Length: 77
Image (cartoon, rainbow, N blue to C red):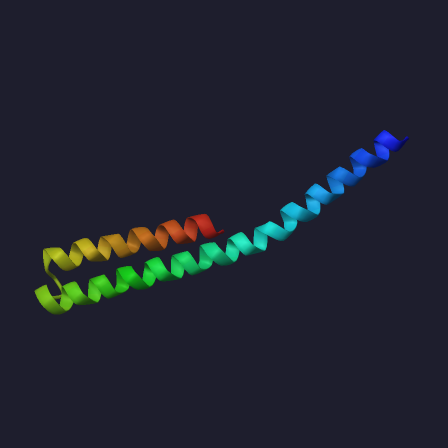
C-alpha cells in the first residue's frame, strides 16, 4: 500500500512540475519569435531603403521574413 501511495505521489509531483514549466517555455518562445520577426522586418526595411523596394536584396529579405513568420506560426500553435 505504501509503495502504491508513493508511486501516485511521484506521478502527481511530475505532473505539476511539467505543467508549470510549459507556460514559461511558451513565454520564452513568444519573446524569441517577436525578436526574430522584428529583426527580419528591420532588415527588410533597410534593404528596401538602400536598394529599392523591388530589388533582389529586398526580395531576399522579404523571403527571410516570411520564413521567420512561418516558423513562429507553425511552432507556436
